[in-house]
Image 1 (cartoon, rainbow, N blue to C red):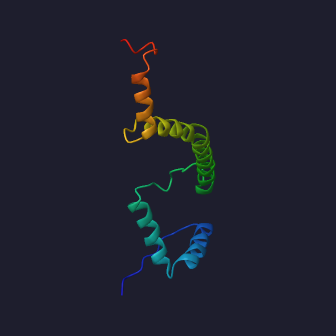
Image 2: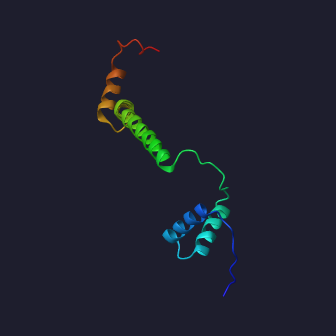
Image 3: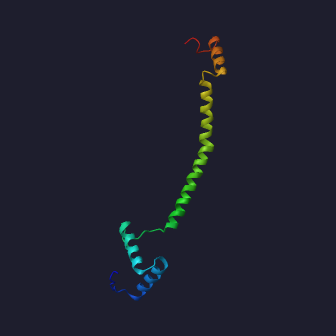
Amino acid sequence: MDAFITIRFKRETAKRFQQFSKTHYKTHTDAMAGMLDFFFYNEISPKENFGSTGRRIENSLKKRINAVIAIVKDMEKNKVNPTLAILESLMEAADPKNKKWNQKKKDYEIDDTHPDFYK
């Protein structure tokens, strides 16, 4: 069995630690080891201030993500779909297997009244 050592804390701090330890760990030793490991492995200082809480950051991120989703939906509605329709119509016109295009080409070649015919 490991030997124990006494560490002096102020009464308020000791009571807070005991309450925390009972809530989250089986023994006070496990609680202290867990806290020390947390700071050691995450390479942070207990004196460090993290600023906003996790919930505030999460809420602000959700708002920004909703704004991005709205922008993407607007782009799909007003920009992407009309552009896609224009590109599809151009691809249909340029498709050599398309019979209508071949007919238009023949009409163009036969019609000598077109201004570009003599170039």
